[in-house]
Length: 559
Image 1 (tube, rainbow, N blue to C red):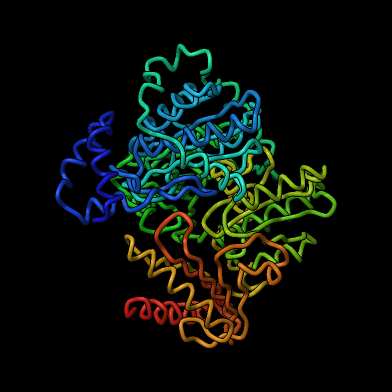
Image 2 (cartoon, rainbow, N blue to C red):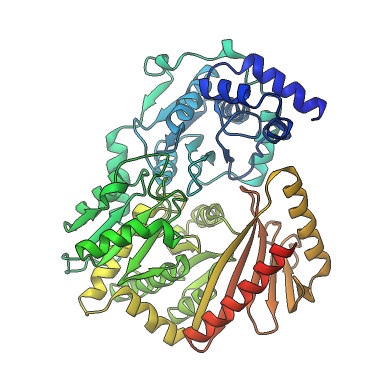
């Protein structure tokens, strides 16, 4: 154990006394060098996604001290850049989310920064909306999105409602480095929040205006309101806003998965509450079968992603996006609301099938880096040019969608209503979403996409992941993992990417035109491999995809 790690551990033993869970964990690991080192060998990395990590004691964990240190740094940054800064705060159902939100509010207030905070758990898109609506300087969302129960996080948003840029993240990181999380006399007790002149609760009227903003994004008003909807918030924050907007839209035949209705940060029925994964939807699928519903929708804990099951078919994030893109384009043309020179936006790892759909309807398709913040930033650029009305839809393969400019992050509340309207629209013609999807495949080609994540845990894992990425970059463009390739795009080279910001991503086109994208995660110790296979039938595409995934998985197992 290094001297630095030992110093930090002893410091925390002496000073980290405000949270009993942290106190007990520090005592429990005493004498275990491996456990101590894992918690203190580095700080949780702050970036454009803020912080994300496992809950626990230490600088490499999410706790009130890492939250406090980060908030002090963010407060210093805001004070340097705004005369009278203000911050909006929200939180989801995860363990300690409310505690971290209150801690964040206390620190901002102690630094003289005005805080506007929801009085109950609310989704990420509602924070993005509130920042812009209330003209705040920044926003903080306490969530780890779709990660397992042992994780939590701290997302930071700018005044534009987007997650912060690389430049802002770098400037905030410098401020965080000099912050002292143990200067306890600086902070007010939580009980003083309500009485502080710098604190206000975000009103119900703001929530209602958010709902109204979503309702204005409807592109159709189907007559068929008998759609039988099964919904699961996966123990998260989606129940209130999703149910409210569906009922305002006229849907009444809605049943909530009973054992996933209440917020619960332990996620007892879905340990990995990610609606991209069929296993996270298993309880909902079972309930859907029992009640005979038409559609299952499930949102993740901070309600910015949605999963869908139609007629027993689990739709992928790409497939939902393609269906919505086609529906929005067709509906807007049909009701004469399609703007001149319309734009849709997707991320680079999202299905290329979108290019064919967009071309069919005369829509310009923009590709941006992975992460919905880049879609939000592009919307901001359109707004700056007075062209925000050109934007009709944005999506990413990880079940994130947004059809309006009222928010600058993906919004599952918006997506749920669009999906229900779309399903009801096709129901009028006796068509299910699964059947509509098949017709789109028959028109545009059979695209099969997948994502595999390979974990690299601990300090040695991070080094191994870096070494692997470096070796792949050195071998490009002729091969990837020993598989022949005919083209490689290195996203660190802006000349190859038409001016996109630099990103640690390698995109390979294999000799059979399969697209393989390698991306070390920016928020987790994982390497992500994205696959896009195109064939003349669904069966052929699935076989080719499965074969490639097995080959690469074997290579990682042998590494």
